[in-house]
Image 1: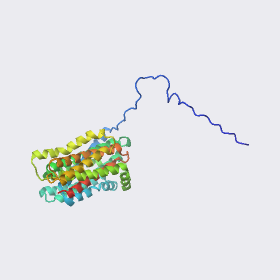
Image 2 (image 1 turned 60 degrees about the vertical axis):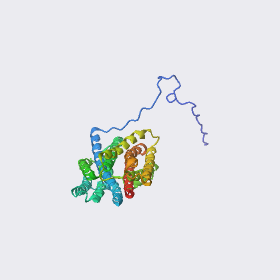
Image 3 (image 1 turned 135 degrees about the vertical axis):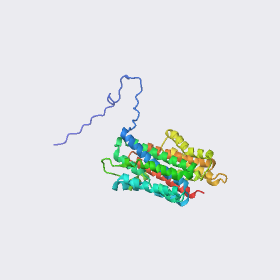
Image 4 (image 1 turned 90 degrees about the horizontal axis):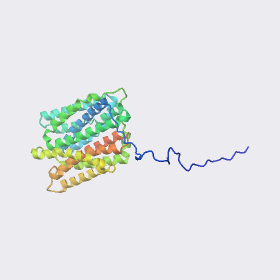
Length: 358
């Protein structure tokens, strides 16, 4: 029996009234989408994220204070040690996270105590030990295991802000009074030790991000460019910033406030940028100009005058701009990986800058 020919129904020329109303408007106000809803943490989650931010920020303070006080191969070695952030997070899946954090902090504190007791006798050891407790990734994996995905972004934001503030305060300490870096680092590490207990398990298996995940994140254009800009800003800013053993208060105070001023300006300027890469690119360019002023001008030595203050301010601005760019442009699941790579590149760049500093 032959098949019947198929009949086609003509498509409607107009959309239904529910989707494209043609009648009179029921309201004279324009139809606009609702503003985006920001994730809000519960009160216990908020305290948990705040304590982890203090933990990560205090360790950043100690590490940044020492790397700006160090020179030569010690600074570069400290930057290389700081790259072990993913290793400590991976170790946290095999051993309890508080035990991992406590061990790293204990080693760093013993080195600070040896440097304090001998009045600077173990400065190189203290600088390397201060870079050891890079606990940002360990804290972010703990957040990922403890906070549900709909509120996780708010917890990551607090952790990133804690690390950025610790970076700026460490730069301020080293720039204003390098001789008090051992005491300041020891106090910061003691404060971090008070928050170690919040890394305990919360009824879920401990997890971490594998190295292929970091390589995948770094292969993306946003994270790759952010890491490059962070490396350049860290190297140029740390070189131009310089460091002196002692200086009068009138000169120490502007150097202490310069990184915080850079943070403030970057926080105000970032929302006005058209995309996530404009501000980090501008900071890297300005850092290169500050390095050129400090390197090629015989009248402007690193750490002095406008070049030194500019380098310090740009380090603080980079600490703010990088996590802000990650929050704006990185994917939800890539955000902790992108922030880790950006902070690591900034610190490694600072080690390179101190290696070539006069």
